[in-house]
Amino acid sequence: MPEKKERTYRFCFGPWNLSEGQDPYGPPTRPPQSFDWKLEKLKEIGFDAMMFHDDDVVPDIDQKSDKELLEEAKEVKKKLSDAGVAAEMVAPRLWFSPRTIDGAFTNNDPKCRRYAIERCLRCIDIARTLGTDLIVLWLAREGTYIRESKDGRKAVERIADAIDKMLAYDKKIRVAIEPKPNEPMDQAYVPTIGHALALAHLTRDPKRVGCLIESAHAILAGLDPADEIDFACAFGKLWSIHLNDQNGLKFDQDKPFGSVNLRSAFNQVRALERNGYGRKGEYVAFDVHPYRTTKVEHWTLHLENSRKTFLRLLEKARTFDEETAKKLIADRNYAELDQMTLDHLLGD
Ligand code: GLO
Ligand code: MG
Image (cartoon, rainbow, N blue to C red; front, side, top):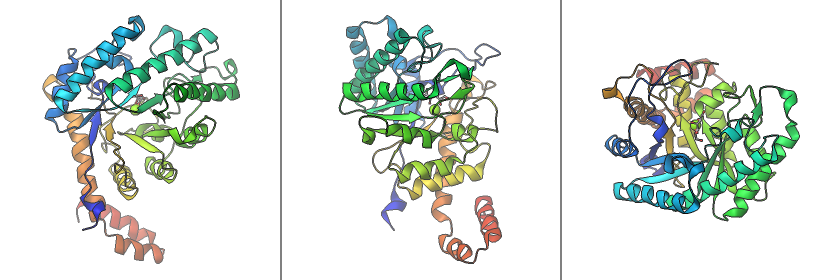
């Protein structure tokens, strides 16, 4: 059997993926849970790594000294090592502070821009302590509600400049940009993988700037997540992935993987498999949330189910009749290729 078929994937989620049911219209529907509880669940349900925001590791980070920050990060590192769980990445949560109301790197106020960069450097200190070289930038507020309020070219240059400062601060880190076209902003400056990878070339070390694809973000941009995967992989730049699902152009729903469009999920798994994703140690992360209606006793089902669906679709990708598909493609019989794909998914 070719090596490819024996390959196993490693899975990951973040503490925020065990959220408590709050939405813009209502308060939590489940009680808060400790980090230790989440770590224990992660192990129980067969996951391998945890992804972090900087303040998942060091809560109230802006109130902490550098010494406190390192001490707290070391404590978390110890918990992870004891549990045999890796840290996949750390992302600066640049969208919570009052200083980033008008954006982080693209804020019109230089003091706020400085804060954002300093915060990223502290995030790098945390990543180093946790033993990961991957920094994820979801550029949440780098956009506008009022287009005339910012200069788009300057905004892009400022983002590149901030990334440069991060790359200079630590020669080992890699930065993965997680693009999203909207939400919370009306319009974002780096809405797609094409934008993210082009932006990499404005930085001092393009080799160390790649991307993270989230299925829902591609869908919100009107794009096919599987095509985004192939595009990023053609550049060797897919360093992480947030698989989930999204029912059309609504708020970012973070539904379980495959729960809206199984065929699209199949094509995402197929693209990952075809591109050898994971061979360089990349993890499959599920950026999914429990439904607001979820009871405490079912709290981790959205993660377990996403993983289960992924593995079942992997089986489907590996048993897809490539030979017949090739013949149908040569014959331009796409109608039959279409039906063959459906039959395969339906189990015929
Ligand atoms: C929100 C994003 C968010 C990020 C996370 C890591 O839409 O998907 O969950 O993935 O904050 O940067
Ligand atoms: Mg995400």
